[in-house]
Amino acid sequence: MNKILGEISEIVKESLKKHLPQVSTQDLEENGKIYYMNDKNGTIFDYYVNSHLSPFMCFYNDKENMGAIKLILYMDGKIDICLFKNHKNKPYKEISSSISVGNDEILELAVIMNKIADNDNKWGFSIEDMNSDIQVTQNEINEFISQEEDFTILEELLKTCIVTKKLLDENWKVGLMQKLETSSEMNSGWFLSIGNEAQDYVDNPKNLCITTLNELCEKDSILISYLMNKDVGDVLIRVSNDEFEFDDGKKEIFITKFN
Image 1 (spheres, rainbow, N blue to C red):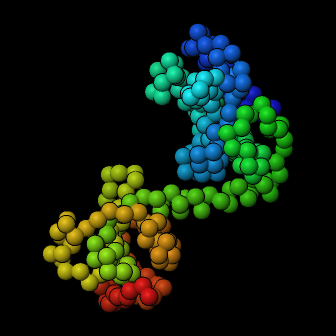
Image 2: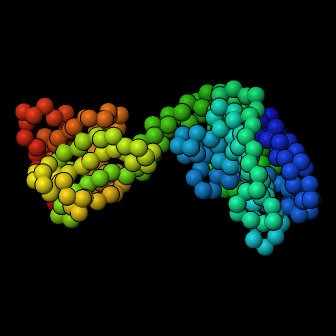
């Protein structure tokens, strides 16, 4: 077994012994096997979007298969442990700790788990039943790293934005984009409109709605590159069917609908 997985296995067993002493291995699914729960998001998504590997879990050996312990390993070596008793969803104890491993070692483990679990269509498999004691090549590591940008973009597209109802209801394309302050991690801060709405229309909250950036980009994919890496206060206008520019007040907004 991979060295880090072996350490995780020991931490899980010790945590169960110390904090759930009344629970025997017979009370746990497959006598306490530890499962890699990549079936919700997948290794790459969890690594680049959530900054950790997919969770490691033990389950009670009951009809409901309720969780007994969940361990999350973060990219910096930090560990969060949640313990559950009385077959309840809410943890009765939460512990934070860490393991002495470098970022490169955790990256390598993520590549290994992606290779032997996700790529092999093993979802929610026990770590004892996977051959994790393998070496990965630098090319495999580079390929894993190369996917970071795609997931960074996906994370941004899942965030919300404010749009005018006229933009959505009348099938117009985005003509104006303005980056505003936001206090929510799930709000992108973007305000998007056709660009020809009257100011009193925009100022009326009844004429605005919330949607995701992804919903807009699915219809108009050129938006993606312009939405990324912008600062609060930036304003962009559409100047042609497939091009935006920073608004300098000298060019007219290109107003158009979807065909």
